[in-house]
Image (cartoon, rainbow, N blue to C red; front, side, top):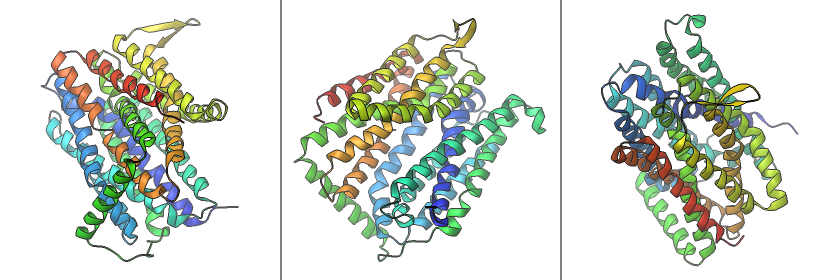
Length: 420
């Protein structure tokens, strides 16, 4: 049965905003921040301030998540709130084009604001899913958005890579100009493909609008109710602690891997190509881990995937810029690690969510997934600060990336004790 127009328009927003996640967050911004804006400060200092920017955005959104969630539950400001925060993200992304070389403070601030817009808009995007789908179609529509996000983000990232590799082919004078123009393309892409949602997705009006004060009170009340219930469910508490630790490691690798690669001498082309490799290997990797989970169980597969992450982290800490010779070809070590990450990244995220769903008491899905999503946002705070502070204090980025192994190891130990 074909999907209706509002469902397709909703799913297309994932195509729109994933361009920011790939080209900006994981791709060009960390490279440009170190090579262009951070002229005059040390590599370890720039790593520290990049980590602070990422962590600050995640912390601010996580702190106000109960308020934003309550507004979304109010039902009369979901689309408007999404468009407001998306507009902040789009405007700040475009502003990155105009920041001159050496102005790392301005770049870090604008990047933080853009990330806040991106993260906060996603809260309302998720909240709109119920209003554009039926119980029979909700899984299909949600999966469509996820798939379009991979495709849309990967497509624009590929175009931006071609621009950076061959700027003259698109009438640009240098690679630097091509990267700066890429920031503008992300803003335009995000804005244009948000229009279908703005036009065709109706604003839910099932419940009465609530004030900001009432939204804050309602959010705190619901969070308190959920936490009180958690005290009676030790298994889910242990799982959430484990999840918070290891997913923090996953998010840290996503946001900080390019910066680390620059510190150990990898070329920009190697780093960006490796990220693109992760993007496209994520499709078959997620499918494969899903099939393995049906045979061996989700917990077993998640533990295996986390062991791969632990292995990747340890190898990355000792890695250099040299390549391995495989079948007569020189293959970058970074590409091999990127391949391993691509194979397990989607599986960790997808199977963790399905494991959690099995722990939730009946008729408490919304409340408990609200806590789960809030923890996911807090899981982007500690890791970047840990890697940045360790690099700064030790004077070596290798110790910084090695510190992330502690998150995976501790998370795995806790998860191993969860009955599932």
